[in-house]
Length: 325
Image: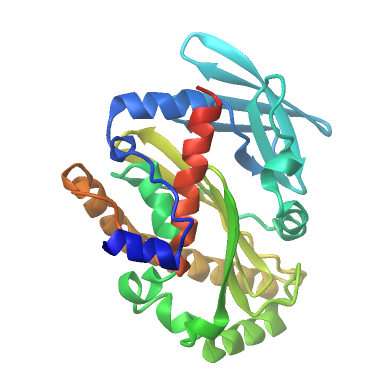
């Protein structure tokens, strides 16, 4: 009865990914073959680096740069598959080469142009960070898509930084497998960024007093602050109950002429990295506790309108698994 009433409110409730996909070896192998062995995957930023590599779900992706050309292979145990490599602005994506399937632009739809514009700020890179989680990779995806967990999991970090009137200033766009969420910064936070900008003269891809989070299926999201700072994130599956969250901060300072400018840039970047690490340190025990409790769940939860991105992700996974079966 409760489910029927809820379906009357949100009639397209759809289906959930089977629970065993969060802890069994069989499901992990299925996702390796049908998701990570088929989909476009974020590899890194196209810059002066001559090589990019990634390990996801037991697959090893290796990309070499030759001038403006990118070539790569995927190692699956003793088997080697060629990669199709493409770019969206400075963002490099690859998939195991095959006939048919969506182009990169189609895979990123409708965020291709927005991501390319945001990627212009992938300058002044800080060292990449990898943080291990004892949780299935999809638990991390669900966590980051939960717009409301800022006030409960991050009451001293994220919650004070965004506008308290979430009904007016939290906006979510849903486009099937991909989605975008933006939350207006609190007045005090916006003032802090304005003062920081006056000192650093940051490049901006847009005038945005927001925290923005753009998700691209299956495991990539690009976070941004103030229309300037961008942080690409990728969730790498390691095992059914283990994953690594990889991210990199780009602080697009344009004022770097003097030693004082460079020192202020370094201190600001260090502060932002430490702040991001604090947030992730709060997320990790929650995701790991959820992972420990997954085998004991009795049924599916109920998702409100603001949480539909999570259910969209489940449906995208189901479509991908079925399409390549």
